[in-house]
Image (tube, rainbow, N blue to C red; front, top):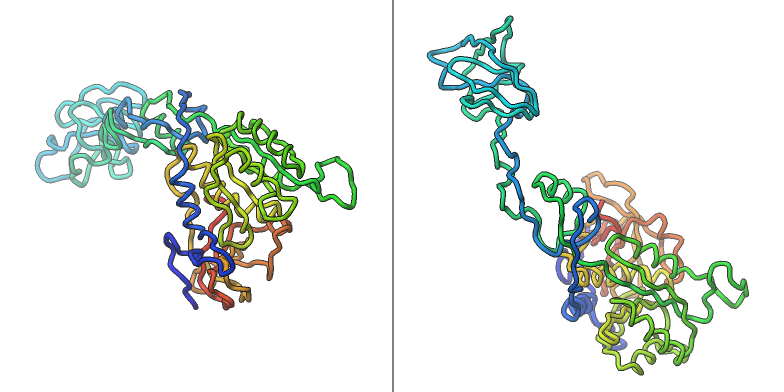
Length: 425
């Protein structure tokens, strides 16, 4: 087994510069996105049950302790351990019955109360003996072993106390966070407003669905793909447009979209060909081009900047390149703009099912699928022998991306590489 690199800030080997021209590493590009991007300022208050998928703008503080009172952790009998005099066994009369949701009568002396899970502990009791550990005879029980104080009792505030911070700012609000708010009796939370995003897919050759089926045109893949990637509770997709290969036309179109959105995403038109007009249009508008080109394969032309105080992410036109660079840079940009904490889905190590021969020089991100585990319990991934930036058929069976180091010309079967899944689970 070959261990290529440990997971870390430069763990995928992408830090090597492209030999042909001074391209940024992936890590440097991500650092620039983080440094040059600020979260949206505006916030709104929402009912906790309606905030699914949003990002918390303020911490959440518990309004009530959890549990709010001492209660039984299981069905059994509440007793006072101090009333059990001498060696056992002890015979106690059962003087009360305490179901969940009912007030409990106080316990006095050598008595027991029949109690059920979640019911309040009677005043005077300090232990709950589970029903399997007692002998019930009529209206009395026999306890054979002395219980310790606190046995099978969930104490008030043992999970969290009223006033405690239970969720942090920047938290992605999901089902688990909703559960915490319910336990803390928090009905309303403050979240970042939805991020306004516009998409501009460029290229005269791109044919919209149902359009002219000319042989000289290709089907538009990027528009539906990006719309699907951006359909989420925290994003407001304010515009989706197609732009021609025209400098003046793109200037007008970009200006209009920048006036609507916090983030403008373009695809295509960012290379150096005569028909690549997106970057010239941005430059004509006085845009701040922060980086253009990253030492990766596929997706080298990916670019980032600001136009009229709005963030801009330029993705390549080829669909697989657009998808991979969105996963690497677009997701990081959205997390930063929405104020979300963390670095997204964590990488993990996997084993290659077969060897790879490739051209070194740029770090590569290749779609891969989890196919099982080796005899040592290590996860194994399979992948196509080669990838093409325009082909997306393999994405439907891929579960993530493997990271291939820039200097690796050959990786043997069984090599240990980094893997970033598309989804958390």
